[in-house]
Image 1 (cartoon, rainbow, N blue to C red):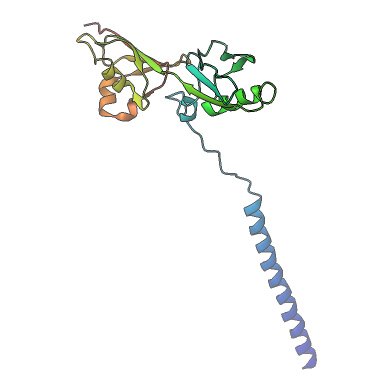
Image 2 (cartoon, rainbow, N blue to C red):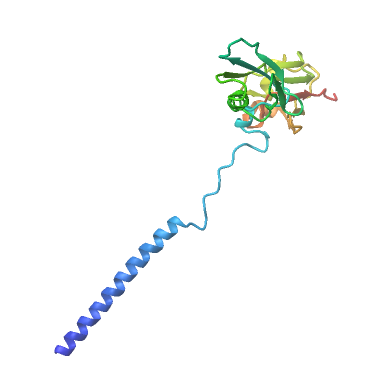
Length: 215
């Protein structure tokens, strides 16, 4: 009887150790899976191939945009410097020369100009950067073709409306939106009026061409 009880006790003890090992091993594996994942979450993509731009890119300066830079807090007042961004993406500021402007936001350009002036030329300075009028163009078979003021939240059909709407000879089904970067998008305005997802946004310096229909 004593031998049987001793063997049983050893058996229960071994089972207990095995059970604890399974529990702790399982907990360790679960924790490791959470920390060292083999399938990380994919990055969130922004923008759309159909637009060619993201919202952040619209807020940045482009070649041709007019930039107004005001320097204050100096012993002598200086007239604001107003200049369109040149083809190389720069503006030319007094005493510091070329400054890269294209691709920057107003805040980024302010910081760069400040760092170029202070403390090398001035001890104290306040820099303010603003943009001039931003425009887009509507040409072809519209009643008021030409340059249009960009006020934000613009689409192809709205842009055509601001240009006086279509003429009687316009081809509504084959309107071209040409981005400032050269991308071309064909727009069927009849479908765009029925489905807003087919009415692409218009950004500064874009061009909308409305051709004449054949018959």
